[in-house]
Length: 256
Image (cartoon, rainbow, N blue to C red; front, side, top):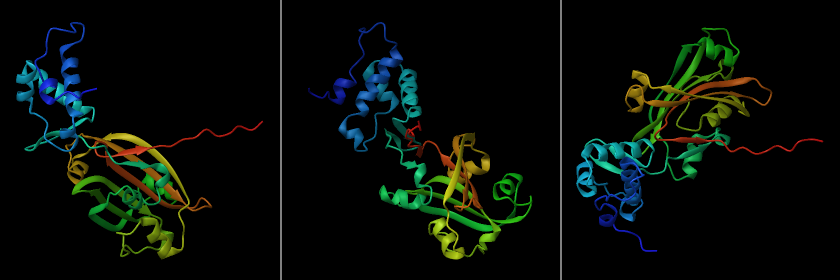
């Protein structure tokens, strides 16, 4: 089957398919264009005025179709640059929680740290409950902004139990649980994960380079030793448009 050219795909819409809404027909044309090799290899997508003229529709119709495809994750826009076919978002499996940087490295993505701060903070009620401490107990908190390719992807805050006897001067460019095990001999074995969707606050938006109110995936996890004693409570904020978390589940066999 011969692949259509861009000129053929963007030819003026006819009166055929009267039962199909115009916006849907425009979207389908743009999806077909996006599948062309030139755009899969990073070429800029035609601008909305060019698309409108070539398809014979209004500029507003072309703009709306582009916006829907951006929202669907097929296209991505950068101010002052243009529109391109979006690259697949890196995915992380929950089973790999012990080393995010190693998991990404296996996918060929070197994780970069854009900011890192480690100092004592009074435990909030949530942190105190997770770490089984009295509220306002001083707890070492590690804040990091990380990502790749110069783009922030996540902001994390990790509260580390005082019995780990960490000072804050450790090398936190290394995987966190390696640092904990090396400094204290304590091994992270279990984790409980909770997820929710939140809107980026002004402070978080500035850290992650997004607009205030942007959708953020908040992942809270409590990490323990094999005996259940808590080690860490963390809140990790992911830019949902730049990253995907996955769950791999399997059916357990049932006893007789």
